[in-house]
Image (cartoon, rainbow, N blue to C red; front, side, top):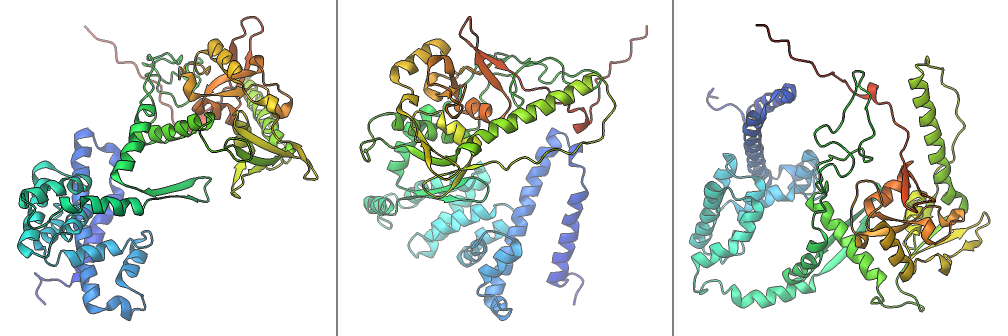
Length: 497
């Protein structure tokens, strides 16, 4: 065989060896412009590899190699080899099949000019056109032109396809797309769904589908609630110019902002996706607080959580122990005492859980946080399983009490936070499980973020007996000097005349 045409497996192995050298690159040494140029080249490399996989997928289908090796299909083989989600290998097979009659798309992918996602959109959209080779080729060429001239990504290509179709068929004689619009909308509405699937990480995956009209209604409601919440830089108590001031030993100096992940610039740290999720939760919370939801057995919709009294109190005991340990460690550091041998610690009880009607479980911390809400009914069971408390009616925050709480706190009471009361919960300073009453002197306004922070960390709050304003007690400082390499700032050499 000629040296100009090496065997294909040898070519692939050589390419893999060359790409493996990327593992030894010092990425930290790249400056901004070099990083931008590098990511462009890596994107093209990924597209070239995907193009080669498409070509190999086509060959696997032609030869039946996957079936001969005992695989049910080529897509199953590709999914296994590439480590993707179930069915991911079908994408390569589909692109291979659809680019058979669109050689320009296959060539652009092989050259790294478009990505696999872009090729999938182009071929998927073009196959919805009538089986007119010239029409399909023209549509594919126009979409490729949008990538070359304007850098359209896969989403942009998907959205621009109707405009490309109108340009190719202005009178609708070939497609009649507008005439079928109402039919497709009815089909989308008929396929609507919303599902919740729990994972093993304490979360839930949400998947849904609906019409453009229904999605627009959802976005119209959520977008105002998802607006960024901004404050004046430094209003949190931190210094925007020096977010983490340290002394010569690397220990943090000063108290500054109470939020350890705050940037002190006054900007909302949440990205768009987080704000949209928070907006959905807030919209549901507002709806739940009204009398608009259907009643069941004479009451509005409420969450029922079952837990034990011991589990409900356990979280406070653990937090108190943790805080005492941290304070002792900090005092030892300040006294420069020599390290003492570790003493055996008493075994702590495992954190309890709360049982939801669906069968899912929550941590005791989450149950305590939920129990601060007026619409949460915690069912507390004794040691023998008997019902001890089903959420006394006197525990619920009344309208008058809520208004008084707003007049006192005005916004989230956590230091540096100014989120409005509409985005806040009424937090029991002394929890109801510990005998705390539902009264103004035992409540404080907290937004969802700081409400969660208060239940999950050693932060403590109480009301000043004179001013009746919330006063916060910080967690003990944590010595993190040994957790990172600290280089004290160096002074420039003195100028010599």
